[in-house]
Amino acid sequence: MRRSIGLLVVSVIGVSATACGSGEPPSSSSASVIITVACQPAKSAPKERQAWDDDVAAFMKAHPGVTVKSTDQQPCFDPKTFGPKLAGGQMETVFVVPVTNYNDVIGQGQALDITPYASTIKNWNDLRPDVRELVTKNGKVYGVPNVHYGVGLVYNRALFTKAGLDPDNPPKTWAEVREVAKKISALGQGYVGYGEYSGGNTGGWHFTQAIYGRGGSILTEDGKKAVFNSLEGKAVLQNLHDMRWVDNSMGNKLLVGWESLMMAMGSGKVGMMLGAPDVVTDVVNKFKGNVADYGITGLPEAKASLSGGEAYMINPKATPEQAKAGMEWIDFRFNTVGKGRFDFARGKANGNPVGVPDNDVYGDSATGKAIQAERVKNASLPVTNYEPYVQAAATVPPKAEPVHAQELYAILDVVMSGVLSREEASVDQLLADAETKANAMLAAKG
Image 1 (cartoon, rainbow, N blue to C red):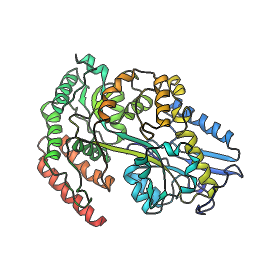
Image 2 (spheres, rainbow, N blue to C red):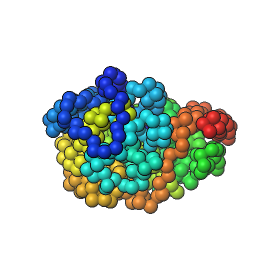
Image 3 (spheres, rainbow, N blue to C red):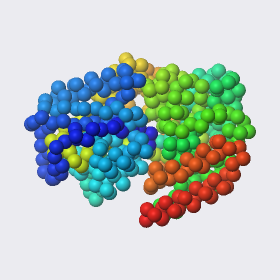
Image 4 (cartoon, rainbow, N blue to C red):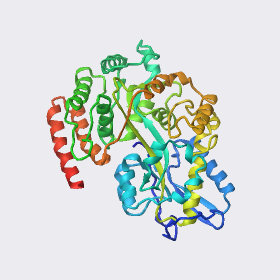
């Protein structure tokens, strides 16, 4: 989950609700077409916003007759507003959907069948087959995979050095994480050894990351029953309880939304957190972290790693012309080597942390190798900072987020908040209460 969708004025989506049928997609340049697109960078990230705006201008120049209007709500996926916006038909022409919501969005007919337009993505066949399969239902394609990731341990190398630790030897076990966290928090007031979420659906999301790493699960294989009230679930919470209340290495501020921990990490006062490599990009670009300070290693003692991501989908109200133009925008901005998000030379010039292995939608295909070569060529920081993660990611099995993930994360937020806010909180009781709520929700979902 972790990314976002902007607010929309519904009237700009289009005047026709004509569905796309089979056959050759129309040319987007044949007439005046207006599309709205999600995820323009915020004004607080002026260089990234300018790069986006430059891409919009270049795209429109190359596609006469197409007008692109951007929305910039950040984060561009907000679980609290996503459902109501979707149900109310208020999404952009091109909008972002996290992998946890693919099935619901597709099953409810809230994404366009883009099968006739898939060839618009010139590198479509180089996208990882397993990732493409996630946006395919009954042989029809409903989205273009944009992000795929596995979880690791993000850490501040500068704080490691300041605390007398070796930044090239990050912790490999949870016991080591705990010891490192104590040393970082001992640097003085305001320093946090290990940061964790407690709400905004991010607490439950991180609980899922941690329990997967220990070999546990959230649900049974058929998705009908909760199984997080387990030895692994209790180990996750007990470890957090002890770090928070025994070691005093987690600070005393409850971090609720996605941005809260990112801001803390960007301040240079947080030593470690769970996250995918793009955490480094966000911390530097959006929250002013020092580009050279961050590294990432494998998830400690990992038996599995939560695998997540997102895709761009097309509003089902889009006209054929809008759908074609939307797909051309997705191809230009997000799927062209050396352009848009893969313009690493521009990213380096803008001070972005180029070199982070933050996406794996193309795997080791020809496109994937070309992207990696460009990333290394234009790296603005030592790629060795991320080598422990790269090595670990190749050996740790990925594990998908559970069905009804957002609802489950909201329930598990209470567990995380409880253990981080009350020293006397009972781990067993927190998990038992959450299990009851989760099973009731699953039963209601059928």
